Length: 256
Image (cartoon, rainbow, N blue to C red):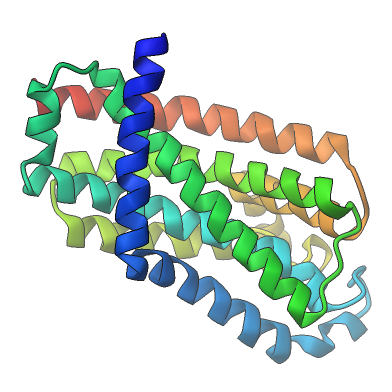
């Protein structure tokens, strides 16, 4: 156990140094969420005047969605990074190195979680500058970051499945975009449940990101809703079991 943690920590450090050196990786994962935050908060600024809109401003409603979007975007960077390691022959070098193969995946998961947490923290900072309020304070912000990072890790499992099955970074990115936008818009991310068409409201209840957004939204606007937080962690755990089982199977097929 100690050996696995030590090996994973070394691989985590390598990926962190790569992120620092290649700052564009951090920028591109944040560019779209920040753009959505700036534009949507202005375009839909008067939405709070509609009957059924129970939030002080659209910014207060939107911030949790942008935190979730950041995790989704960042998750597919994980798969693209896996393809890059395969194409560069780095994965082969890891496989012949005297380290446990589980350490390779664990180190990557640790690095993904750290990157997602940093990105979520940046979104929180920008939101504060724009005038957003966080009712649960610093502890609530920490919980939001944990929720976003956990969900992002679970979603990263899906990106790694696609990457390992296709072996193509461009295809992984295209599939990621095709999946991310329907998942995001077929939820309560940009419109309250009360204002959604009935069919879309039904679809949103089966969408895992809805539960993450609603839990974070409660932390931002109302307080500690442990029921929503518990559902969010439960859905994330279920998603992680599915995606990591598939990712592990795909990884074993690649290295066999």
